[in-house]
Image (cartoon, rainbow, N blue to C red):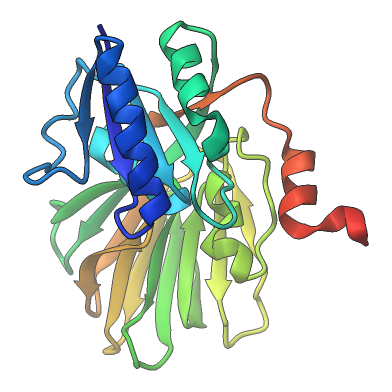
Length: 277
């Protein structure tokens, strides 16, 4: 008997309907099923006994699943009920059969690099916030605010300051998320690196830096303009002058189910319609 946790995009009726059918089938086969859309679910069900997490939604649902796991080792199978679905593995028609394959041990795993994020208030040496990102960490202007100035240090040495709408520290997985819209490079998700990309920079130096994964990247808000820190799209802190966000490679990884090697070329061709050009 396996414990399967379904992380469901509650605003997509087709995902909820498939979760209903999948849960019924798994229970009939003698497995335990917990669901993120059940009343009272707060992630506490995600314990070390979890054998498989099935995400039914888009990439955001997978990010939520990884966050709920909080470093636990259960693999995540993504069922694409979204639009782009960079992180998902199977389409809805194949969901049940794919879950059966995983529970039978017939699958592969991709281990994706994550970032550890620490938020420090000015002059404090103890982090107020500690979080983890699969896609990216962003220091950006507050809603409706002006550009912010962010000072960047690499491994404790001052690099430069950016005047921009924001600054993105992304993993290779996150290179096709927010950083992509800021014209950052597409990086094979199995690489290990940190990409630092400015958003609408007001300066001549506007290129993405691709850094060693061992680099410690510190972003400090300079001046009086307020900023915010978001982690995989979640707001985690409001920032003022002197506050710092420090990013390093995490000691945890996201474990995504695949069935054979992921075809990055085919994924990009399909998602962007490149075969028609």
